[in-house]
Each structure stands twice: as structure tokens, then as C-alpha cells.
Image 1 (cartoon, helix red, strand yellow):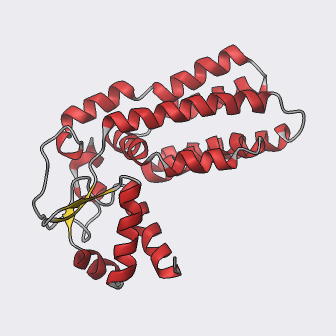
Image 2: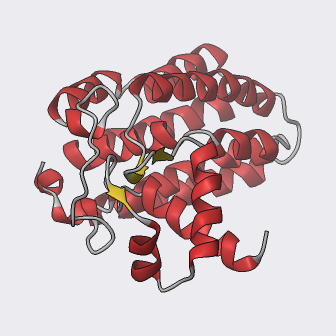
Length: 245
């Protein structure tokens, strides 16, 4: 895979996960080429890779669609992360070294999170959330597990971003991170299990509300197979009323 293909894949994947491109958006290869100033070959190769991840859906005779969010798939992605992360936390609690170094990185992440909350930047907060949790994986040499989870959590990430944008970033999320960190560093297994379950499952009710309110963005809604001119020229989160809640 050449560098142009890799770059196009990275750019499109990021724009999909960041909800810059609306779930359900139907477009052509030419739309992408015009928007990003690139050739057809890297775009076509990138779309094929994204389709294998479930982020792109090919519509026979109609074009290509940014895949809608599948709530059931997002729930499975959450379940996978929950199971793996619980074991990662247990391994972290058994560390005799590297814990103090990781603790410093975790506290630095919490400081950044508090600033991002004040800035009300949902995308940056979600990125920092990933950084925070990745510190635990790195400390116990489970980086590959973190990569696999993040590479296969497209629907979970999009619904989390949608939820953050709809409800606003709560100071409570940062507090949950802090309590989770303290439980792990203090080797309090019961508290760790409780905090992790609360943190990873806290948005379930909010997400079900989103499925109803924004049905057109989810697979449960009407299949959208009409071309719209709201795609690559605008940022979905900026152009929608979501930002006002």
C-alpha cells in the first residue's frame, strides 16, 4: 500500500470517526477526489479498506455511503473493551515497577482533561480519553490489545462522540477517571470493578435516547440512499444543531 493510499485512508477514517462526515451520507468517488484534491486510485483503495471495517457501505448502482451507526455493534464493541480492560487493570495492579511512571502520565492526562472540559472540545476530550486508558495498556505491555480494540470500535466511538456533543462534556467523566486511577493505584480491586463498570456503561441510557432522537444516523432508521449536498463541504457536527444540544 503506497503512502498516498495510506494518507487517504487515515484522513477519511478520521473524518468518519470524528463525525465530520454524517452517518448515512451518500457520495461518489469524485466527491472525495474534489474535496481532498487527490486521485481516484488512493480514494478507491481507502474506501475498500474502510468497508472492511464497516465504516463504508457500497450501494449498488447508487454510490457509496458513510455507514450508519449500528447500536448493536457499538454495544458489542463496548463489551469487548470492558472485558479486556478489566483484565488490563488487574495486571496493572500487580505491577511492581512502572506503576509510578504510569501514575505520573495518568495525572498529566487528567490535567489535560480538565482543561479540555473548560474548552468544551468534544473531539479533543474523546482523544484524551483514549490516551488515558491507553496508559494502562502500555504499562502492562498490552499495546497490541489497545490497537485492536481502537481499530474495531468505530461505531462505539461515533456514538460516544454523538453523546458528548449532545449532552456536553461533564466534569463527572473526569472525576470517574480520577476515581478509577486511584482505585487501581491503591490496588482496591472491588472499587476498580465498580468504577470501570460505571465508567464504561454510564452512557447506555443516553445512547438509547440518541437512537430515538437521531434515528436517521442509525441502522434502525430509514435507509438513506439519496444524494445530499451536505457532505465533504461541511463539518457535520458544526453544521448541525447538535452543538447547541
